[in-house]
Structure formats: structure tokens, C-alpha cells
Length: 488
Image 1 (cartoon, rainbow, N blue to C red):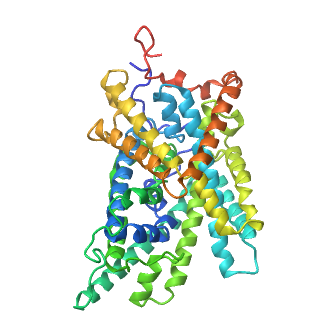
Image 2 (image 1 turned 90 degrees about the horizontal axis):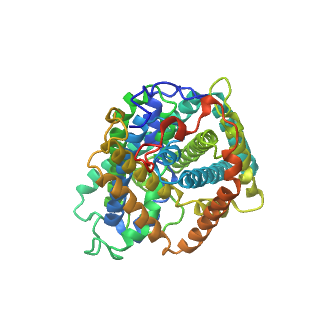
Image 3 (image 1 turned 180 degrees about the horizontal axis):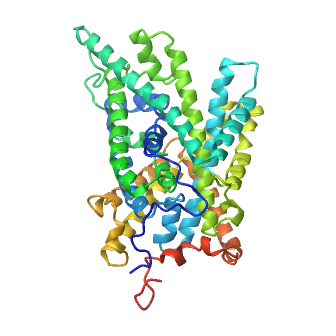
């Protein structure tokens, strides 16, 4: 059996502090999936696959997200760690190159997402104050968020809690406004719900649902941040099981109800023009200042995403440093348990958002998002794969059953579902309009990372590491048996 037994996960990780509370984790996960992908991005599938197809696509994506959360919950309750699935990949996957590759890809994706969200927030702020350039707003927002993250994990959690609360409030308000609109229209005999128009459920063919899944699944990605936060949450083995299922069901409920409203009242065939369908509903209800309200909500969504990007990317770099996949100084923390150097390097690279001085903000935002659009799917595949190998190792007697403080149901089908669906979505993306460009960009990133593995691996492995930062293989053992059948 592995050397790791059922030790209490409540002990703080070396250098970090367990400052996050249940309410932080709950709101962070709930609000983390509510962003511009829902508020603005939903206009595209509504037009391309129709209302009914959009509703089915979001419900299916929500099911994938919930299955992923179950797999991650089992891993995070057993091994709460701020490196999340990158660290689990080192523990459970056959070769450490998997952990190295997904860790750096995920870190890069968050760095580019940070630059993209700063660009979006700066562009919105520029609309209110046109005399101030976009790149200057990007810098101001970045500095403020950097200072918040440098204070402590708790300060990040509080900031994210209230930013997420704004988004959740907007969704609840929208569902209520949509309910009022539907109730008033139901008395009009000439009104016909747009859920089924022209006698067709899927006016452009059911296969269009598969094509739009990449847009839809992107809306849910980011929920895996719960795994990173578990390493800094009080009593994660108690909190996480209560949060995982609740988060998944709440997200599906919010998305489902919001999209059901749009599926019933939003005009089918309306060409996306950059205006949020939410604004259209609010304006039809007669709510004054609907445009201003949604602009502020989208601004808070962009700032929230940037805040999460700094947290997630810095913890990923901290974890890789501890696993000797990155220079050791990235694992150093200040008195508040914050990985200072990991945050600073992330912020410095995010200054690429200052290029909005030379490139139009909207075009630059699209370029940044397209460059890392599928890394989230790779992360979810890794989570499903790690959970499958962990549970199999427990069933084979290589790990103590006491580690299963939370059990993902229907093993091994949940993990297989996560892996197969995400692979299908990734492959489907390559056949979309811009899929070829996305594939080439991400393959280029992956090739560069793989080359760095073979070039830098000897130097990384020979670095001196103190007893408190022993590699995961020495601390936990691996699930791969050696030739004599014992755990390495």
C-alpha cells in the first residue's frame, strides 16, 4: 500500500495558508462560470442552432461540467493541493511529462486569459471615459488586482466573492424579469414561444449542436479552480463534499433557467451584433438603464475572471516549482502565505495587454482567447484520467480506502464520460471555421513545452530540494508498480 495513509488534509500546505472559507469556495465556483461567455457569447448559438438546440447544448455541457467536478472532488478531498490536477497528474499518470505539459499549458492559458480579460475590462471602461486609452485602464486594473492577490488568499477570496455575487444577482434578476415577460405574453393569443419556430426544433440541423459545443463548453470552464482553492480552504475534506454537488446543480439551474427564458422569448434568427441578449430582454420588460446595468455586470465579470486568472496561474506555478518543474524561487511565499514571485511573473507577462495601444482591443481579445481555447478541455481530460487511476489504485489495494472521503458515483463511467466528451469536443473544434488556426497555435505551444522538457529536465531534477519540498513521488509514492509488484 502507498506510504500515504489517511492523514488529515486540514494541515496547511508548506508555505500557503488555509484562509479561504466555504462561502468563498461556493461563490468562487458559482460565479467563476458566469462570464462573458453567457452574457454575450450565447447570442452565437442562439442564432446558429436555434433556441431548443442552445438549451440542449448548455444542459449537456453542464452535465460534462458536473461530472468533471465529481472527479475533481474525489481527488481534492483525498489530496487537497493548490496545484490541483497538475499535481495529481504527477501522482497518477504514467509519465511525469503529462504533468509538466498540462501544468505549463494551463499556466500559459491563464496568463493569456488574464491579458484577454484585462483587455475586455479596459475596453468597457474606455467606453465610459473615452479620453483615457484602453491600455492605461488595463494597467490600473492589473495593479489593483495584483495588490489584492499579494495581500493574502483571503483578500482574493473576498474580492472574488463580491464580484461573483454581482454576476449571480444579475442572473437571478434576469430570470425574474424573463418570468414576468413570459407571464405577460402568455395572455396574448398572438404570441408563440420561439422555442420551436417554423415547425422545426433544429432549423439548421441537429449536427449544429456539436459544432457550437466549443463555444458552450468554454462558458463552463474555470470551475476547476475549486481544485486549486481546496489547498487553501479550511477543512477541505469537510467543505468540498458539501460544495461539489451543490455547485454543479446550481450552475445547471442558473444556466438552464436563463437559457430557457431566452429560448422562449428571444427572436430566432437574430444576427449577433455584439449586443447581449440579456439587454434585449431587460429592455423589453421596460427596465430603465438595462444597457448600463449589463455593461457594469460584464465589466465585473471581466475583472472577476482576471482576478481568478492571477490566483490560478500563480498557484499552478507554485505547485510546479514544488514538483521541480519550474525554478525553486516560485515556491517562496511571504508572511501571509502568498507565492509572491509566482504572482509577479504572471503579472509581468500579462502586460502583453498593453499591446492594445497598437492593436484594436476587440481584435486583440479574440486573438488571446483563440490561442488557448482548448486547454480547458485538456485540463478536464486530465482530471477524469487522474480520478480513474486513483480509484483503480484504491480498488487494487495500493491506496487506503480511507482516502475516499468523497466518492464520485458510477465509477468508472463518470471518468470515461468526461474523457470521451472532451476529446470529441476538441476534435470537433478543429473542423469549425477557425478550428485550424486554433489547432496550429496550441500545437505550437505544446511542441515548445515538450522541447523544454527534454532540454531542461536534467537541470530541474538535479536542483536541491529541502525536506519540506520533497517531490510528490517521494512523499506519496506512485500508483505504477515496479517490477517486483511493489509501489515505487
